[in-house]
Length: 604
Image (cartoon, rainbow, N blue to C red):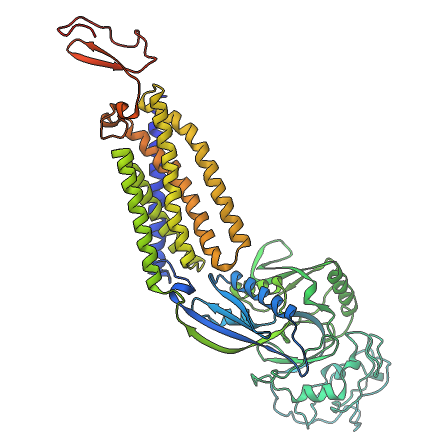
């Protein structure tokens, strides 16, 4: 049983590496047939070219752009691009104003939005809401009291049941001052639609018509704001191009899909108070997952307190003043009502997102808002900076290096060198499959630095085999049998291999974390091939050598096996036994050897 255990373990290792190769090959084939996977690794910007986008800051009159703002924006864009799975992108500043983003592909609209949007999430209370586009004029109906007063009641005494104006202003064709229209009027008398120039009533939060004190104060709805609100047509895609989003002032804006328009109060909680953002399916009160996608927000200490304060205040207000709008880049993405105060600093946003949209938005919120808003100045196709010629030279260099390793292995280890060649071929196959699959699943792109890492790994992989083979030879010199030398040599060699590959992998991690994008490709492939090297040595090289040690060709030390005792310098004691010759290494006692018998040749 003990003698067969190494053989069984060796077979299991070889079957494992075979199953891994078949599994990766099947995955790649399936990705090519049923998805958008390719059978070759994707190439980076320097080898294939791509798209260059120049972003220009969108500033108001007189606004100055600092170098700190530009560098901060560049760093955030880098994080967004990486989180979006775009590998090998380059983000640089141009002069003291623009940002240049070079992507090794034709970017989708989602990628473009992720790059250029400010993604500043703000929480603002809703003061008024109406349909996004002008609605047909309703038939005017007389007021319940017959009053012809065009302005809302100035009384602050609320009625038991608030009433809503039944007709819109004929001049604006909009139910604009919706918040004012729903303001309670005295003695239950319905008020006709207020005119755009009406002075707002005091808000239910204690503000006055002239001095707003809280974000929920209706005194923010000035005649100018009302006029801007009535003139806004959210069906016009350019309607918000000239919008000025000041956190300390009210905002007139649209729903992101253009179905509604809003008057919002000043910012109650700003996006820089978000400490984390996640995307997933919402969990109901019973703890079961639903099909509704949500974005979960965690606020820091100050943000949690602000959110708790505003939710306590708004929960008792009438509609729409009990709605807190979440705006992204000045557009409302959702405006939920408060049913209860939220005191734990955790908010949830649901708005009919797909899971992919929610994940993209959560990444943008998590990395923070750009300090500046940007617009695309130009977008052009760029040619590869190195091109196929450099890739061809790199492949030729790799082939030459591989050929030198093969020649050295065959010269030094004879037939045993074929184990090295086979191990390198299997390692190359796994590396190719892995890089190609990563290109499909994670959009990984192989650049020239990555090709260099693969070429360098050939030497590292050969080092592992050399360490193992030389340890086996040392054990043979100590008088062990080949099978014993293979097992004992492996126990000692694997420690050295683990330490050497551990150092390589640690260096790859440090390079990847600290180096620039041009060096990261080298660090990634270096780390990947180091892991594959360990896999090959443990699951292929050692098992294969364990099985070969049982073959007579290697066991008897054939001159072409690479394990010839005479070539290794093993001291030998030779005695003639009968017609033949018995050779034993030092340490073999007379009891373990066949007894010498006198023959024609006598005894030596």
